[in-house]
Length: 235
Image (cartoon, rainbow, N blue to C red; front, side, top):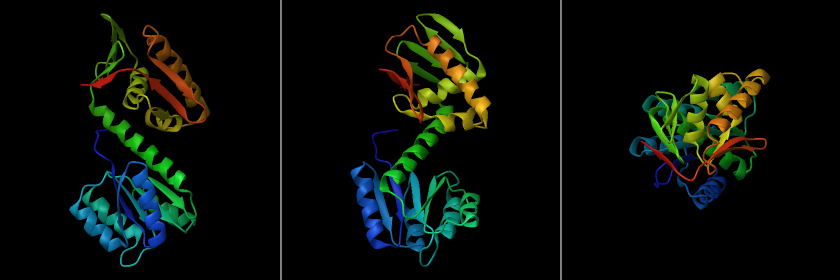
């Protein structure tokens, strides 16, 4: 991520809730643009570049589902979160079929929305990490394309799983890599056996990185892992 603020398009027809959410996101360091209905949201998205969208489903002029379909026609990758008073399974499925990244039923806490937004942004960052070829992790140089880890001239060849997991950790360095996201990204399924397999690979990576005492992979209870490194540069 650059120093530029993440820009969020927030479409909510409840004026009080919309203003509260906008002010909350701004206090958390985001650039939040509030629009009162789907048509206004569509015009705003057409004019500006946004990193993430938060759409209420039940809005006048154009509902959240219709707005999401229009947005997806313009940009197939921008993350979308739906807010709704509806909780029927059919509505949730419709949202995900339109490409929703997440779905919150009202009432919800603003802290929960913030957590979902941060989770999605880390996920997007992880996907973009595939374009990065080389990381400097402390004293190590990790070439994700060649799947090698170099330390003081000593080169170690990594397995595909080791390389993919280290790539995700490096992309989220000094931030939490969510356990379920890593499992679904690398192992496709987050079942028990794959989870145990990932634990084994985490142990292997810790051994590979042990020669630099300033680098560590720590467990974040109930959430995932964090690669601690004093220096991480991307080439």
